[in-house]
Image (cartoon, rainbow, N blue to C red; front, top):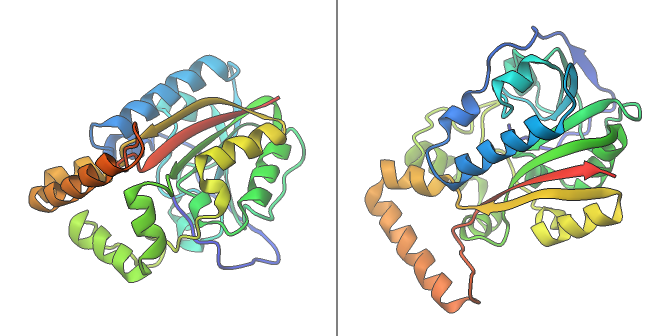
Amino acid sequence: MNKPATIDFATATEINAPAATTHTQALLDLVPGEARDSLLAVHELLRSELPQGRLATYEAGGGSCSFLPTELLSRSHVTVVDIDEDQVKNNNYADEAILGDVQTYRFGPESFDLVICYNVIEHLPDVEAALLNFRDALKRSGMILIGAPNPRSLSGVVTKYSPHWFHVWFYRHIRGIKNAGLPGEPPFPTFFHPLVTLPKLEAFAAANGLEMIYRREVESPRYPEMRRRKPLFAALVDAGAAVMNAVLPRDTDVRRGDYHVILRKI
């Protein structure tokens, strides 16, 4: 679901897509660990806080699966906006799929109950514009779910400063994703705008009419994946992370490579 943002579409194109069915494999694909536990907690919060009945949901970036639980997806009218034509074509659960840029594409005010921006903001050069678009499109008390990498973690630093070919190599040879880097397939180029950093994101939200009602930093799912697939390589990475944690300020854990946030419109 993460998207490149290097193309500027002058106009957006609507592409017909089938109605939502059960496409929540994204959760099932997460190995047991902190990230999966946090996403399950997010699901419980959404169930309790979102209105009952039909929901209007905007997915900023949408591939072949959703991070929503089945019961919420089944009662949502899902609108997807994505800048990658292959990703839009791969989406077969959205009610409406739009080829466009989430940084510039604008909906009418109070159009949605929920905006999902999962593994997307790290790929955007103008996160501020995207977030303000999301806020403006929300109904009052509507929510934005953000899942993103932590730029201050070990994996965040490596991702930010390593070349894209290394990301493709890692996906193919460590994660075992053979089609990584092919058209429409992750990993995608990463920008890491300053607002991806969690404290800056929280401050921006507070200054722009958004209340952070859920925040959790979690160990990147890449760690349990590596421990299962490449135990020797994982042991070396874990050892390096332990050394870094020992010399950094107390309570720092550089393995906390991801976070989940829910923002509510005040």
